[in-house]
Amino acid sequence: MIGSVATGCVTNNEGLVPAEQVKVDRVEEIAALVPPEIASTGRLVIGVNVPYAPNEFKDESGKMVGFDIDLMTAVASVLGLTADFKESDFAKIIPAIQAGTYNTGASSFTDSVEREKTVDFVTYYRAGIQWAQRAGDSIDPNDACGLRVGVQTTTTEDIDEVPAKSEACVAAGRPPIKKVKYDSQDAVANALILGRVDALSADSPVAAYAIKRSKGRLEPAGELFDSAPYGWPVTKGSALAPALQQALQHLIDTGVYQQIVDNWGAGAGAITTSQINGAAG
Picture 1 (cartoon, rainbow, N blue to C red):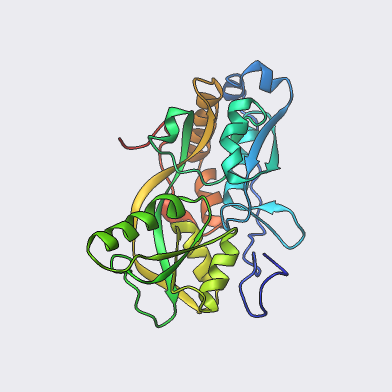
Picture 2: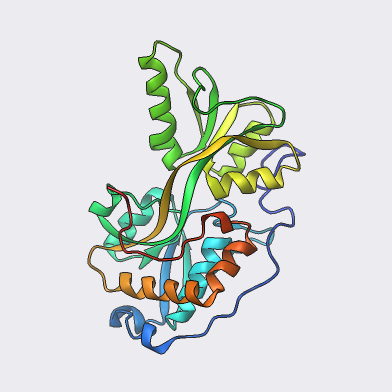
């Protein structure tokens, strides 16, 4: 985080927060789909875990920004609601949605078959996993046995991807990957720059942003892999899901969606159709 890392390391934005803001109007026929208990409050309460730039993080003034933030703000506007972002631990967001504390979450949730057992998802983006290395290194994500790999805690990379690669190493009689966990993606990138880890693994837009703001100190390691959808979680069977889905589809069809993701340099993962529960079985 800003102020807690060594001089010369990356910080949250370094001038990479877009100045352009997209204005979106209410669409009556879509707003009518919002469940009455939410519509009556005038707010869409959204759980968010920061920092995870460029998806969701805080700028130098402490304001929450990112393409997730801009996109959900636009969706809320289509629904005639004000987006009310609540900062939370990542692992607590889905339980809070189930408990009714939040209406949804905008925090780069991978829509998975396992998660769909407890909540429904409205897909809004497609991300893969991308490793990064220090410039000039030669790291192969498929041959990383014995290396130190930085991840943000509770991410897909922490829970599934790096452990699976490490287990394959052990099964082949080779040393395991040493997974090094950090509470924020900023800390992961800084650890790599400072040589505390040999590589990092993150969602593709997050890795791309870290590389961009490293000013040439970091570069991709290997190709993008394991592409999967991001989704906004809602309670199972909630009428909010089709409302969110149609609001997002409206933004896609009118070009606003592409404008938002392009503003953040995240256009590579843009989708053309939003789905409810779009995880591959």
